Image 1 (spheres, rainbow, N blue to C red):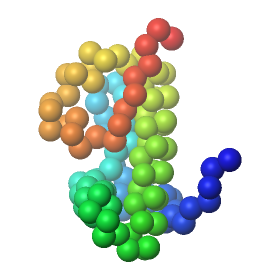
Image 2 (cartoon, rainbow, N blue to C red):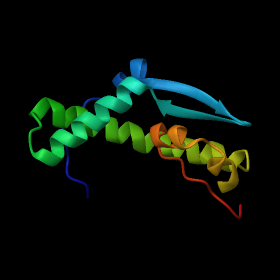
Image 3 (cartoon, rainbow, N blue to C red):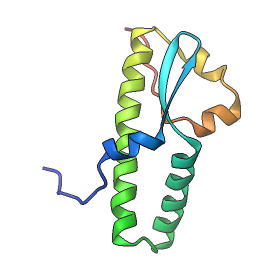
Image 4 (cartoon, rainbow, N blue to C red):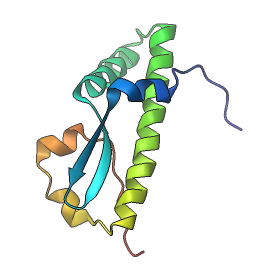
Length: 107
């Protein structure tokens, strides 16, 4: 069983941290540039061991939202029969700022 952890509710982060983007025939849920930058900032502070308790809760919430987006985007990709080829067609910069998107093949 997972150990309980303090986190900012992901639903609170969605109000200002969510963007919806269409790529080809699929709609993806992604972080805004601001939320993505905040995630990077918190990850760096975490690696250095300088997170406050509030920042650790914020990071936990952002990571949970990332997991949710990854799951939702994976399901959307599978429904549209999106393939790795379409993912590779995105520019390098686009892929760096995306929420992780798994693609399911052999459905």
